[in-house]
Structure formats: structure tokens, C-alpha cells
Amino acid sequence: MSVLSQIAEYLYLKKKDPNRPNSSFVKKMHFINRLSILLFLLAMIILLVKLFR
Image (cartoon, rainbow, N blue to C red; front, side, top):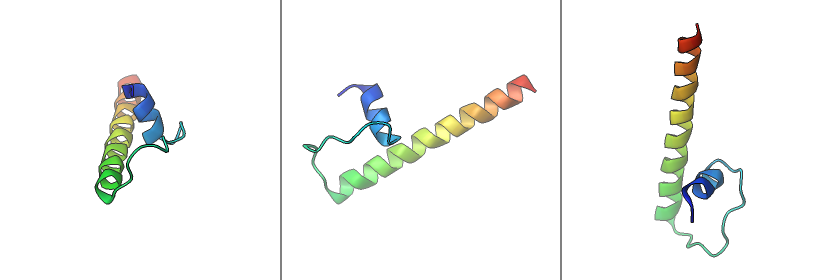
């Protein structure tokens, strides 16, 4: 699976793969990954706003 496809799934832009294992550890890992991506995007937006001010 490509990196961009995985990010799209984390951000709910793409439907999840039904054949993927579904355990509590995987759910927790995906939540942490989703949170880190969203925080990174938020930080990039803040940096861009500060750059253009």
C-alpha cells in the first residue's frame, strides 16, 4: 500500500480496506497516526500564516 493511500485513509478521504486486520492495537496505532498527521498539518498552516504576515 502506498504512503499517500494510507494518509488518505487516515484522513477519511479514502474508504478503508476491508481485508485489513482489525484489532484494538491496530485501531490505537491508526488513531495515533491520524492525530500526528493532523497536528503536522496544523503546524504547517500556522507556519505559513506566520510567514506571510
